[in-house]
Image (cartoon, rainbow, N blue to C red; front, side, top):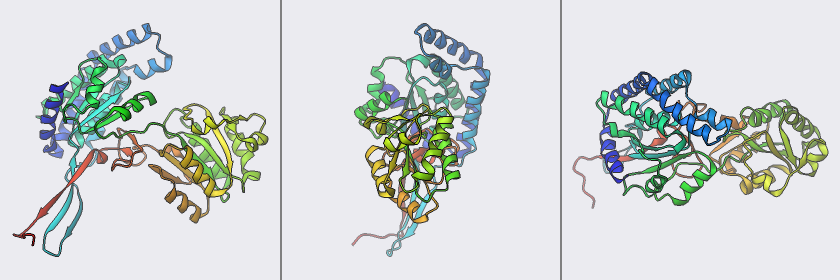
Length: 413
């Protein structure tokens, strides 16, 4: 692992200086090698699948792990799509002149070496490697043991593509062992050779990374997302947004887990909002007022306000106006994504200003919490910390910056 870190650091220095054309050539070559090695990748995946089935893994787990010709083509196409994104490296973020004549520029630079720790989704190998490369970084990837063979075959194809484009194969490497001690080594920073860790997986993985990492982490622990239907909300709009926010995909981190309804509009809005969710097959756990609105509602507990269900379940509460809604989000939320539905611009501005979440929306579904929907092209995850990478982490967020200063002989008095 120490040697892997050293080689990644050396590769990162070279990749940081690569031109946009060279990186794009490498990305297209990586996609080509994934297609060329399709038989080997699918054979490796078949071994992973056989082992997972023998261990009694769930049908959902098996589906996430499974590769076929169509899914492998989608992986290759996703790598190619990163090549068409604008190069984030070298962007002049700010430029100004000081009274003494110094010309100062703030310029985007790669982060360096990014460690990505993820569970058994083979496609993350390609997605993460491609995004890191586009931003001029090297990547050390650590997959779950169940997808080790599949991920290794994909990573080897990508390394071949890098070499074909004249870039170091060590710029994208999969940790070549299933030993869980490798995760601890990455979290320690590999003797200063990892600059950032990005975990992609369930709550237990992210919690361990956030607890043990000795380098910065881009991640979110939970997506406890809220929709607040304000007293000035249009009912038809509220129904569309609430249904989409919860039920479009219940298992994603941007799925709404709690609905807050303003008491001022509860007589007209609460019952139809509850009905549209219940009729769509969503269970509701609500307070006394919500239970009174529909007999199908079950009682909510204190824990429900803190629960990320990732399922067709939502907690619903009636609150006394905007102040109480904001207080609820602050108390129970996870600073991920929260939305207000209202026709009152002043209420919307207060919500957007005072809710301290990575993504806040007005009159839109929380399911827009996605880098692709932001126009980023792709994302490596969503971060809820307060570092520069907050919200969807795309290629621009995988860069830092430095100051370049041009003088004409100035000295400081």
